[in-house]
Length: 262
Ligand code: NAD
Image (tube, rainbow, N blue to C red; front, top):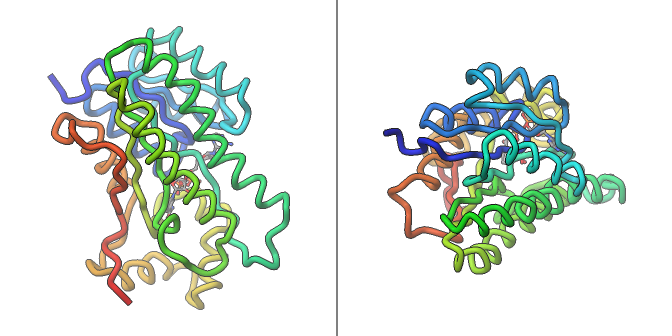
């Protein structure tokens, strides 16, 4: 059997970008996948690419809304009868300097990422704990949760919040056999919807490069000089939730082609 055969995975923000690559990889490894995203049609279309509704469904969920999150978890339980693996991936990046960051910007970043991953993990944890069979929670945090960069105060602060949720919940859920780990990607330009939504232009301006050169710019500043793509993050989710790392919890894996000491 495949490594994730019969496991039920709930992936937020999985209608595009990194989340879609994660859902695709988990489905390929035998998991049943729930694609939770803001737009129901987009979520359903992404699920349909993975197969019939026996293996993948799309559900509408604004992760910042507790009732919406609970409905999406309920739909998951109704469709597949349980939940074994949660990926907190939904996010957005406003990427503004401090003086341009409004209270609304701060709240949106924190509502979607810090509060959103808290709400999703909480709603799913009830099933994970009750099922008594362990499970996995993954947070897609960011290199920015650890390293400082320009024009990113609200985004980076909420990514650091997510990173600490990983450490705290690894302790609290660990006694139920649930592992909680994080991934810190950086510079995923190709295949990322954040890029399409103006993030790329913003970052390119911040670093003084042309937007079409942004991926190469990110790659050039790494140790490996290799561009990071959504599938690289999906590989890390696969490894962290697979059988080989069964004694690993509270960890963050960088997927950034390597950061050299300054
Ligand atoms: P993306 O824009 O392609 O994907 C984000 C998805 O989240 C979209 O489908 C969007 O509809 C969904 N989403 C946004 N707000 C939501 C909400 N309130 N409820 C439910 N879904 C919501 O971007 P991506 O690059 O694939 O980003 C995925 C995650 O990876 C984010 O958390 C991001 O912060 C993180 N990340 C990305 C990079 C990068 O370089 N692209 C680096 C580090 C971390």
